[in-house]
Each structure stands twice: as C-alpha cells, then as structure tokens.
Length: 574
Image 1 (cartoon, rainbow, N blue to C red):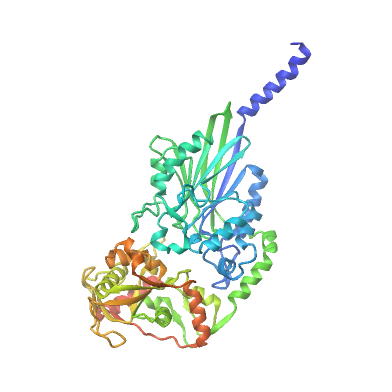
Image 2: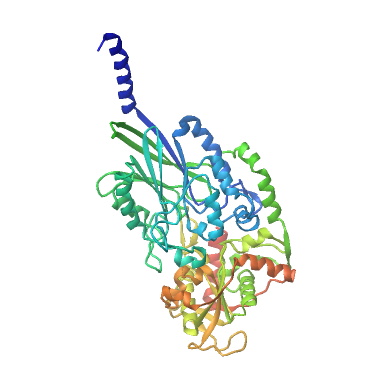
C-alpha cells in the first residue's frame, strides 16, 4: 500500500475502533398509574393538583436537552381511568383522537405497558387508544383466546447509538378476579413469571438485546388472588429470573428505587414512580460495546420528585381547549341533594353516603339485598346542587352493576368476610373498634382498604365485635320487605362488577363460592358503568333527600360507641 493511502486508512481505522469502544450514556424515564391526571388540576375536588403529565413534560424537556435522542420515555399503565379528563374521552367524546394519546404522542413516549384499569375501560376504549398511539402498548402475557400470539405487542426493541434495548411488557394476570370477561374479550392472561422466562432467551438470542427492561404492571410484593395468580411479585421476578437489567413496576402506587442482586449475582435495578405523576423513576445507563460485545455496563436509578416542578406552559397551551371541555363537563348540574353526606360515617354504622349507593342499586335492579362499600376513604358530598364532579367523589371507579344469586348462608359468609377485615376483635372497652394501624408517617390508617368494607341493605343484622371472625354476624329473621330471611333460601343480590368477579375475596373466601363458579351466579350485568346509572337516577328524581335505609349496628354498643369516637379522632382528627 502506498504511503499516501495508508495514513487515511489508519485514520479511518482508528475512528472505527473509537466508535466501537466509546461509552454511550442513556437515560430512561418511567411514569406509571397516572390515572387520568393529565393536567395540574383535580377536576373532582376542583382545585390544583400535584403531579400530572404537565409536570412530567417540564422535566422531560430539561432532560432531552442533555440526552437528546438517547432518552427513552415509558409508561407503565393505568393511565385511562381515574380523573374525569380520562372518562370524558373514554365515554363522552368518543370521536376525537383520545386526549391521552395526543398528549403521549406529543411528549414522545416510546412504549407503554397496559394496566388493569386500562382494561377496565372496555375494549372499545383501549383498542381505540392503542390505535391512536404512535408507539406500542405492551403485554406479553395477554394471550389470544384463539390461535397463537398476544393481544397487545409483547415487546419493543429500541436502538440508540448501536445499543439494542428490549422493553418487555407485562400486565397483572389477576384481571379475571376483578373485571368481567366482556371487558377483555378474545384474550386471557398468563402467569408473569412463566412468560418472562420464555421471552428473555428470545430477546437475547434472536433480538441480540444489550439491555433488557421489564416494564411490568405489577406490585413489588407477591399477593395471590382467588384464581391463584400473583398480582404482584415484581421483586421475586427481579431476583429469581436472570437476564433482566431493570424491572420497572407500578400498580401498587408505592414509590421505590433500589437495586438487588439476582440469583446469579448480577445487579438489577427496581423502580416504581408511584401514582399520579408526583414522581418519575429514572435509570441512567453507561454502556460500551466492542465488536458487538459489551465491555462496560453500569446502571443507576432514582426517583424524581416533581412536586416543585412547574407545569410546562407549552403543554398547557396546546391542550387548553381539552381542559375547558372537561371542566364544562364536570360542572354540569344533575340534581340537588337536600343534605350533606360523608364517607367517614360509613365506618361506624349505617350512613347516608353508602346508603345512597344501596338505594340506586336496589331501585335499578329490584334485588332483595344490596352490597356496597365507601369507595373513597374520606369524601364529603355537600348539600345543594349535585354536579357531575360529585358523582366521581361518590363513586370512584367505573364498576358495572350485577345481580347475583346467593343463599342466605352465603350472604352471611360474605358479611363475615367484610367485617373481618374492617372491625377489630375487642377484648376490652379500651381496644380499637376498627382494624387500624400507624403508617410510616406515624398516622393511623386502615389495615385494609375501605373499598372492601361492604355493608348490606335489605336485611337487618348485628356485628358482635367481641366474637372471633366468622362468628360475628347475626341476621334478623325478617328482611326489610317483611319477608322471612332463610339461610337456605336463594336471594337476588346487587353488587358491583369488581365484587361480583371475586374482588376482595368476599364471595370466594367469605361465601365459599369457587371462583370459576362466580359467572354462573350472575343474573344481570349492566352494559355501562354504575356511575352513569347514578347520574340518570338523580336526573330523573332531581331532588334527593339523603337518608339511611340500611339496618345494622356494631355491638355491644356500650363498648363500640366510645371506641368508635376514639378511632374517629385517630383517623380523621390526629
């Protein structure tokens, strides 16, 4: 080779060698469980809100200035249900491109994992939303009922400066316990652990992934549900299944960022940003390759608190017309309440708050018995005009309404299960009435979520708090309609779809009905959500007098009365 040609060749060779060995810095941002908090405003409480996509947009701009195209933005599901901004574009304006899809496209998301509350909106909503997103929504364990394959895409491969990053999506498989089949037709849900084990070799060997990120809509800790599936277990998967570099979690709304060693001794980062866009989780990656071999790979993770981050003005201006549409929707008057109702009252005895739900359910269905719980832990509905926003306070979720067939014995077992997680066993007058404990902030909270504290209307009963679980409920011989209550007789019971599908385990563990038999007990299911029927019920009657129609009490009252006052102070006036 002539000398004049050798020097350029040597220069190009060195440049190529440098390119092979240079270190690439990547950043991955994750949102999860946004629950319709797109704007820095709570349309339900009618006040400014923390978090939201608008604050994510501000931080995103800042980080893109540093990382450019080497930044990857991901969402981990439960983004289509919660605030009225989501509801409006799910069910009211169904012809426009969904607001959430437009926002995520604008922000440049590159992949998302489907969450259980996204499925709760129904396939017409999430199918439309997926079509309108400029990036794939993932769930490798949502399998087609007919034929091979997955309902959503299983993974996405993203290449940044020669680095191949595989994003593997999963959804909690416990959906059949919570949601009726008509919301997820044509699919079923496989175990996450098994599915991850199947996909990791493929991503390594066929896709030659340098980094594998699990984008799992799961909680951190294992929690088995009625069908034997684990709705959480993210920590165990990260520890026990080699090959994952990062496990991004959501679902349980518990912010966390930590790294662990898996069974092979490799470091795995686990991050969860919590809910509502108050935090972001981020992973920084420094990686180098030489001749397609990784020579360096270092990861670090953390949570980013967005509480003091201002909403992005350009984001707000772009979506201001949508903001005004939603605000007008929630400000619509549907009727008038002649009294005030508070969910706090529901924990200590019959309350107008829960009994309003009972009244609607019994009136719509003609059922013998109604089961209902306070879905919002601490909400007040004021006397006066009732707006659409108030219905979101009163009924938080998009549950459907069922009627089911239960025997008297099964009704009693259901209630034993409810009060078993709700009420403490008192062994002296000084004990707590309710099952409460101190949290990390040293504040008293319920041990179990209040949305599982069902009471009944249509029957009269007492709850003896001095007796052990399973022996507390005594149901009177006469029902509210004057008929005899018989443990062996079959009754029509009104419940929401979450409960009717086994949510809370009251029908399975309490009533003793095998999970696979629950669909056989369903007599009727409404085609739209219960909140819609509440709106229509109020519009028809126009003026509603809050009243107590249920008939139950906690005994002995000489104990429960003073203990209830003490627990009320601990919970609500610390």
